[in-house]
Amino acid sequence: MSDDAEAVSNIIDGRALAKKIEERVKERAGAFLKDVGSPPRLATVMVGEDPASQMYVRMKHRACERVGIASENANLPADAGMEGALDVIRALNSRSDVHGILVQLPLPPHLNERIVVGTVDPSKDVDGFHPMNMGNLLIGRERLVPCTPHGIIAALDEYGVELEGINAVIVGHSNVVGKPLAGMLLNRNATVTVCHVYTKDLKVHTLCADLLVVAAGVKGLVKADMVKDGVIVFDVGINTVGDKIYGDVEFDEVREKARLITPVPGGVGPMTIAMLLQHTLDAARAAEAIRRCHDGNK
Amino acid sequence: MSDDAEAVSNIIDGRALAKKIEERVKERAGAFLKDVGSPPRLATVMVGEDPASQMYVRMKHRACERVGIASENANLPADAGMEGALDVIRALNSRSDVHGILVQLPLPPHLNERIVVGTVDPSKDVDGFHPMNMGNLLIGRERLVPCTPHGIIAALDEYGVELEGINAVIVGHSNVVGKPLAGMLLNRNATVTVCHVYTKDLKVHTLCADLLVVAAGVKGLVKADMVKDGVIVFDVGINTVGDKIYGDVEFDEVREKARLITPVPGGVGPMTIAMLLQHTLDAARAAEAIRRCHDGNK
Image (cartoon, rainbow over all chains, first blue to last red; front, top):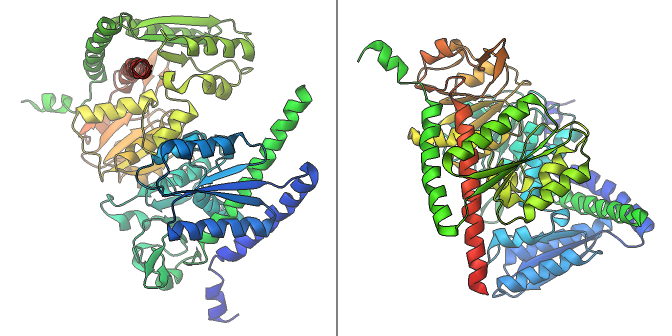
């Protein structure tokens, strides 16, 4: 094997992993359809016409289509009020054919994101952002959890990485990545350090990492001299310069030292969408199990 | 000042701090009574006759009495079933004169603790163990949070310790201390490391700590050579040997290097109870504010 081929093999191919997960979801969504008579269904809720949000929502619907999950989008006008938004969500909550509900964020500033997200039925909250789901995550009872951390955990599983006792360092303490991922790694008995913009000497911490997850939104933040040999690196950063996308990690130089590393793009991103599909399927199966249990009790 | 007096001054007097907080709660509970016509009220729920649980419940009721919070105890027989336990909690949920509900843990093994705790109205969950409260904690919206971590944060506040950017190391990743405290310290922009029984080299981590919280339940786990000069130490351990209680920290030797340190007993314990009282008052005030808001909307 040439040096080049060996070097290539330490790159985590997020697209290939996502495809593998999507194939599993597709198979199970097909079985669900056959069994129940209707497919799992995801409803997205979008307010306004933000082009980036429109693109993300389209990507999600296309992904649903690939795996046999039905989907629909409720697009509210940019000036929709709280009551209008909550009515739409309550209607989706009450529909038994809708298994997953995703509110595309960010919402326009006049809407209270916390209340809108908090109105989604936790059992349909495929984004995992509802406080109830976050709390269950923290106490080790993971049900629907945020998609990006779940994608990272799923990739680690696929690569057979033993998490118990490893030093995991997360850079970034956001509600969507850093904090829930910290909880999920603790649930798997990793030693977890969470750093962020207030951390005094980032390098002291990153140098200890067996697993390093960077979700800071700072292009080129992590360089080769900040990691040890054999580190596993997940780069969650998406930094756009012109029409190119960069991660938070200096990929070419860090890759030389890494045991495994995700590229940007094509790393964490595709896994995140695959998790959304898996969550929708999981929610559908859980709802169906509960329905049958109730029917059985009649 | 003699060397001795100086050395004494680095001990965090949990009893004195708790007394200070209790005095504040007492004043506000008095104002609540005057304003509303009835006092804040805590209801404890105990199943069976475990002597340790009985002692803890008695301590909590006595503490309520000290500060003008009314309290009552529902003591179910040891063989009470789930429906009986849930009925008691639902009845307390629906009583507008009960502001705080505390289920004394552990429950007998035949009862599902998760379901029992999850049945408490989150707005009356003064222990902060409900997933909804845990989730709100994780996403930075702290309402009712677990009492022990809250007591530690309150003590740090009282001593004017700046948390932003400090290296906080927690030993123990339980649902009642380690994980919620990690979230609360992240919310205050500390760099947080959580270690536990699976951590490979504990000393590597503890030596970095500006703030060290030990909640491992292992007598004498942390020794002087594991901490740096000027560390702040909270010892959550309660280890009984004969009729003496020891913490997880070798107090006498670690105290020599510490800027601040809690003793065991008389450190974290009294603060935990003070927080329970404060939470009951907070819950009563929040309930009253909501009641008035509803009345105003009529």
